[in-house]
Length: 318
Image (tube, rainbow, N blue to C red; front, side):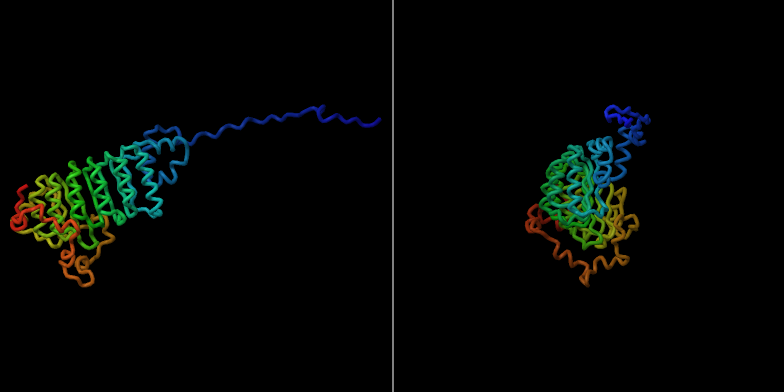
């Protein structure tokens, strides 16, 4: 008798029981409270958050886009391409949704970036610009004129015009702290600019002029024009000799750093020459060489703001 074959559809189906796969447990950080997650992510730094953390998971992405995360933005000491840094910084400023209070940019700053910050961060209290040669005095003046809440302005390794100093003083009535440290670059803050600080920033409590070419004349004007000054940093300002009445006035400053005081705590110490005289003797130029050329377009009419007596006896009657 021929062997019978059962049609495929009639064959008995066999089922093999296998345990249902369980979903993997959520990562341990997923259950953390949102504020703790945000605190941890903040410690990574703005660049790392934008390049990596924001793409890890939904909860992290949500925390990274919280405006509270971006009240303080520090984009310094980076090896990333400058264009990428500028894009990331713009994005971070946008994420702050107007809540940005403090920002630091180093090396990659441009006019467009500064204007973008001014437009999107009207509550900004502290602006720190380091080695941003792509930022012009003109655009920085335009930017600070919109930052009426600014209390602390720090400029490193850039030249400042008298017009910019005036604009800062007149546009930022809450300004309490001003830092203009150019060391170890050639000194650029002359007595004319020091006088502009004295005239337009009378509410200052803290002033740092580390490594500039200001003389006793400029320091005298600052002391007379800034009656609330509590901290004054004149380290490496070797044109200043604190003697006589000037020394007496300086002693009234609570936190006074004299020209020859130690500067081991200077954050850009790696750039400083071990021989301080090298700082001023560029290629054999004399000490006052740079003062001869320390002017800009605004200096040409600068004296119109002052009477002749101001320059002769340094009295300030504003």
